[in-house]
Image (cartoon, rainbow, N blue to C red):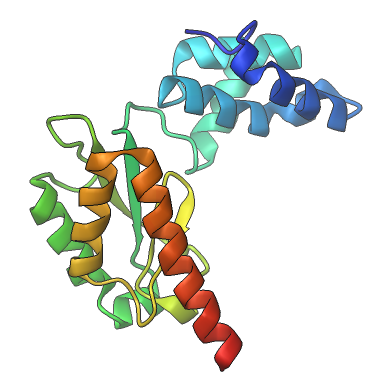
Length: 184
């Protein structure tokens, strides 16, 4: 596996590099591509991004280490990040997060034995009006009235089926939320 020379990523890499007069400015979107390919920002991905941006690998690693959206260790196929900031916590996010960990049989930041799910809490996903909510692989997952454990069980079951089923479910919930917002 590699991002350099991989036809799957070449167009996106070229687009990011073309956006900026200095290649170094493309480091963050290229780190996303590396994370997408490897499931985390590993040494190979860092070296490739450094090569693409004409940077030292140590500089790239320090950027990846600074931002929480880059994982420096392997994650499950689905990275579930439950917002537990104040607004979400007041609407039950802490309990929801603990129930999710129990449902998956893992501890905070852990990954299920089958490698499907990693769950952790994060601070502020900017969805306070739809609390509690979470991100799944950087896609907002929210529901009218806030997510419940019933929603999360449905999400887990959909993800275990296939990506298409999961995306349809998330889109359905998003449409319901948008419809409610338009009506208010």
